[in-house]
Image (cartoon, rainbow, N blue to C red; front, top):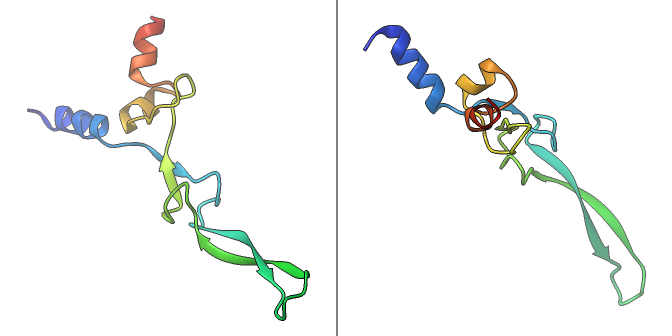
Length: 92
């Protein structure tokens, strides 16, 4: 196969990654944790802790979704627009 054909196949098999909308690419999110007061009083406080983003698994990136169906898009589809090949074929 030609070099161009190989590159097209590679782009079709690789997902397009975008910045995680939840953590904005940091991979970490600030979570709220309830802390009880010591000594049995009914007073406590809400503390914040840093933890890994659950949406991206701490990677800071997620697979770009198709705007029509929400499925992940390949790099090849992303080069052609914001709609995956399946949705593009259904439209046309």
